[in-house]
Length: 437
Image (cartoon, rainbow, N blue to C red; front, top):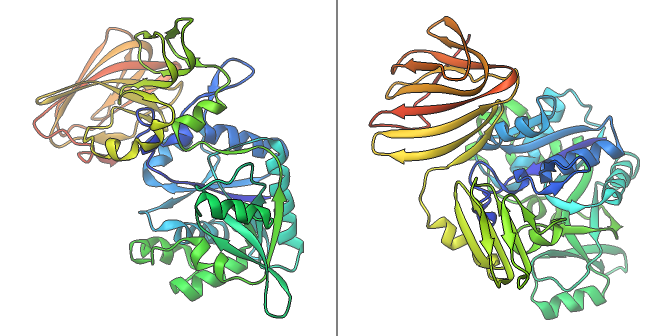
């Protein structure tokens, strides 16, 4: 089975755990049997592999998320990188061309497209497998999953059964109705549109040629910024008459706000948090190394990370986005393909960062034009390479790197943690030049 997972979003609604690099799908809140926590992307990837171990999974995402994906899923997962955001039709066309041109998948094979972040059980993926089979062997151009509504939601689009003038059955699509309309749609047998659909590669490659002028991966990628910004639903689904809809009746939640995310948490506290016995319906997620204490609270969420601290009524947390957009602050935490970093202090002409490298991982060999750097090894071990000179390092060692010198660090079997101090008047993530080592 071929699956494209759409991984977008800036994570504003789940601040401070999410930011422009770590969107909601990378937050680790789901407890596994071994006591460790996993993220939405890790959970859905594992569920796919549980249903079909041989599934080919490709994640369509922005460049800023690639490191986090490699960090959480490893280097084997396929990634179709969007040079910029052009809405879902361009993203799906590019990912489909990636499967055909780069992965070598035949255009007569089917593929299922679905979001990376729903909270579902394994029956969801059994339904996805049914979509795949229907697209692979059926006679319809497009096969959609319709999710059985559990209440008249105003947040989701609806797939409604309909008939044309000749009495032929079909479907119409509506976006986010008011509650009264939603109730009417449900009475008429409408299903939620969860953005899950299947097709043969040839179908979207043909749509790409007609609507975007090409189905070539290289041409789509190189000209991506100039592609029309349009959703897949509007460009393709709403204009298609050859459609089959398969209903899904299992668990499905869109964990887009703190309120809905808290409902999916198996325990009320993650991290160092304490509540007294007068608290009720309170959830704490604390990524800071200091305790958080709640007293006499009801229907609240408390979230603390290097990005900031949120204390909110659960219902009010849905309205967080405009307030977060007004916060202009450097990103304080990010996962990279080699590990993670956390900003400890921002000063005038300096930046202090805790860097953690996973075992046997390394940074890119790189240099900075406008800043000096100093590394202090805190734990673990490995080696550094500075202007071609290797050095074995252990806790307590100090490595200095003037502006312009090439450098990297490579973790040993135990991993490696260091404190990095950046010094300069122009400290920027853009001040980086990569080299082959």
